[in-house]
Image (cartoon, rainbow, N blue to C red; front, side):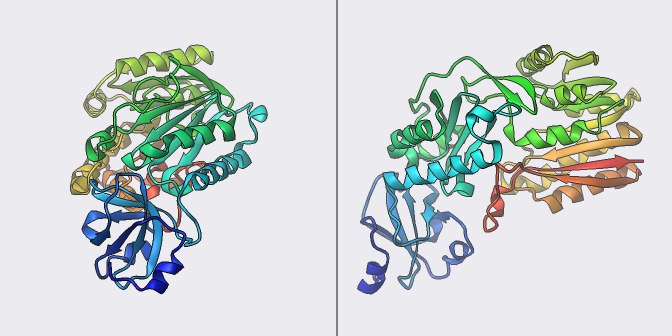
Length: 409
């Protein structure tokens, strides 16, 4: 690699692996991106397995950053530091994890003070300088989700520091299913045995979370939004579409909803939703129905059913950039149906967790729905991710969750 000795010295201390980019391909990194893709590579000085620290230089030889190398992935380097004095090693990972946990304890307090909420995100990938790692606290357990093979050599130290920093009784490790195919990550990573379930507290209410398997059945990112939407539920008939395990409905019931109906295509999720109401008793009538939500919305339209508050919280409808237009049409269609099912003055709380759909595009899709429904729709609140899911200003890709609360006349 044609780099001057002075520039190499400036990048010390550093690993032996060095990566040079093609001309002009440093621009995303200079803007703050943590991702170096294989198509941007000009030369790689050396050969090393996934997880090896690597220095990244622009074409002229100027040092850009240091991260973890993956020789066989489209995402070749996940940058972790822009400080040339900082080595990427065991001490670095321990420090980053301690800092991430400390930031969450500033939000939620130390474990002994967790009365209202004891489940939250501890590490959020790029937002905490640990691209490809997500760690969530569920009461006394931590769930670590790994989405890149680069972390495989470092998992022992990551687990050890998570235990030390949190005082948790165990770390359950999970692989991201896409990463198993995309990056050659093993399907199992070891870690502590997962209990069948653990009880957590959120907003003062009790929920059961399954830690075994690929999904917990509980989404921590909607914690604040569940509370905010529940504030509109008093004396209203509520429909929760894509209700999953029922957390929105539990909070709506305790906020004084008149009646609640929930739809989801997963029978096990609905069983867990019913269980959550048992754990948090209330007098509100709740009915759950296994259904294909878009089809059920159309049936409700044909049968002239109606509600005062409708919650739409679908799974990701856009997973690839090529599918953006199709996904936006899907968002428009379900919101159109929901708007038609609302009584005058009703509330629509609608969400998208598709990272490839930004808030402007989501608002546009809801606007198309309002226009086609010939209803007056006014946004009264814009919702997003809670503080334990922060978004680096230089990486808007981390802002995946967005929501709108609308009044429909």
